[in-house]
Length: 330
Image (cartoon, rainbow, N blue to C red; front, side, top):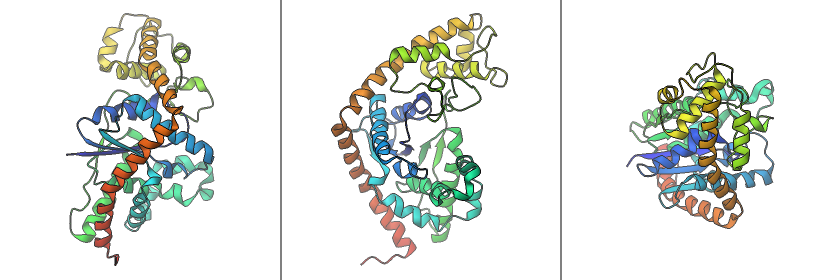
């Protein structure tokens, strides 16, 4: 059976972009793939984190997974730091990764910004840890957004380098899965900026813990334009295009179908229907997520069981990789 691996960082509020771009697709895949989903807390500490907030956010992301419909009986859910094999394989793969490959990674430049010389080694090398996350389970498919495709390409390059060194197809070359109308959800205040948990305006995003009234208020206040009708024109109408994408994703239809449905309508009519649909779909999710966050014992149990199952898959794969490298085990 084909195996899927993907992860989400526990670095603050989950929002609509996380849900439409990743978590909802995770749920859809759990019936057709052998799925492993990870809360990547080791990736999170590549930037400074408050320890208490990191613990809280790890449970919150897990609650978001469960509230959205992930079933621990049909998939594996765990936090990365519980399975030590991730770090071990990452070190091995570091030794197969030329600096030139890492220098091409765009996200390091974006995250380090003007403080590049002060950035931690972990931030520079985290794409190798991401490759280890994927390759450790001999993953065949990775659901990602457009902005993460480069990391899967690097994982393929690293896997190829390892395989060539030892003359066998040990690691499969993982395939990125980029699907859906809203693989990149934009800010409700600026249609050219990605929806982000770090945006200073809470009205720029829909948090998964927002109640129905808050969801409605944020969509009502979402920035639009004065052009009548709904058209797909991300260059000239970025805010309208973003709302169109969100509607299509929530409704499970294409952009073209949305445009046809609202071609002759005032944009206010479209916005009202979008708001009603978002409240109906996201309100119950937020309520369930809050219920789960209030039950940390259950959430921790899901993570503990998931880590045991993940480690059972990872250990023999790492052991074989160590044997190929030549590590002595007595």
